[in-house]
Structure formats: structure tokens, C-alpha cells
Image (cartoon, rainbow, N blue to C red; front, side, top):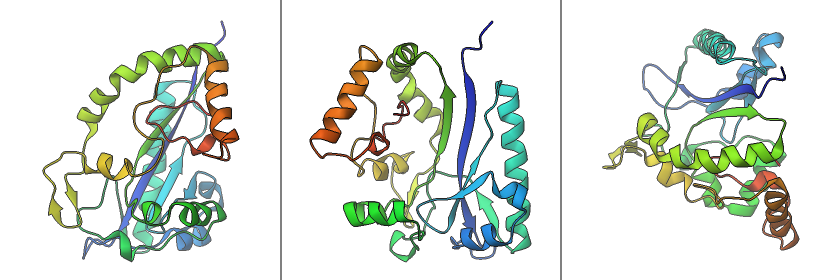
Length: 223
């Protein structure tokens, strides 16, 4: 029987100084000095005080959980060797985005050139679950139905009530910060994979985006 889906998990972590609890730029040093085998499963993100772990493709939820635990353990060990800790939260409670260093990668520099302070102020961290589905039309059907559960998942997972030292009065201020980006939030429905492709192509043809990866909905197909 053909398997319906595969799984992959990406997690974004903060590098924090345990004594001051402030963010620390460290991703370049970690990548330069870490275990080459482990380095295949971590990557740079927008700011240098953030690192992302990337699991291999997993066949089951149990496999994904095991990989996530191993990656968190290994990342924490590497950070501790430099006197730092890793933290998983949607936002840092008091650090300011103006003091963060943008990662020297063309993709991020181009985004910064395009969106300026909108990009620079995205001092937020996230969890991405990738689901590999071979049947593209089935993928669209599932996405249409899963949209309903996005507010429920946010309510269960919200963990960022603070922003730049202030109690915001909201449980997930990360959501507010992320809304500054274009093409975010809950996606529209589509009738088929061809309908989604037509939508992406229209955005490209009208110079709204240059490729489908510039769509950042909370739930989205890989183009």
C-alpha cells in the first residue's frame, strides 16, 4: 500500500546568554565549529541570533518526534559549549530588532532590500511541519479543510505575550509582527492544484512576486 504522506519538522531557536537572558548572534560561529554530520541538519535564518534545525524526511510521527528530540539535544549541547542556551518561543521578551544582525546570505539581503524595516523587524521564531503528499489535488483538498483548524492550533501554541520589554495584552504577539509581511495568514480555498498554480502564475506575471516561495501563508503548498 502506497504511503499517503511523509513528514519533516523545522524549528527556529533563539541563542540566549543564560546570565543576561539577551539574544546573542552565534549561528556563524556554530556552523564554523560544529560537527560536520550535525551541520547537515541546521541552517541559518534571517538573523544571526537564530538557528533552524531541519529533520530528515520521516515516515511516521514517531520517527519525527525522535528526530526532533535528537536535534534539540545536539543543538543544546553545541550552544552550551560556547556558554549559551537555546530557547524555543515565538518572540524574545525584551530584545529589540534594531540591534540584531541580518545574516549575510543573498536571499535575506534581497528580502531586506525589497521590504526594508518590515524584514528587519521580524524578530520572531517559528515551527514548520512539512507534509509530503504525492497527489497534488488531494493536497489542495486537505489544505482547504485544514484551514479551519489554524486558529485552534494558534490558541493551543501561543507563547509570545511580551514584545520589547512590554506585556502586550495578547497571547501571541508573534502573530501581529508576522502580519507585517505580505501574503501571510489563513489562505484562500482553491478548487484544484491547477487553480493554485494559476494563482501563483498570476502573482508572478503581475510582478507581485518573482517565485512561489514568496507566499507565506500559515498553511501553504510548496510551489
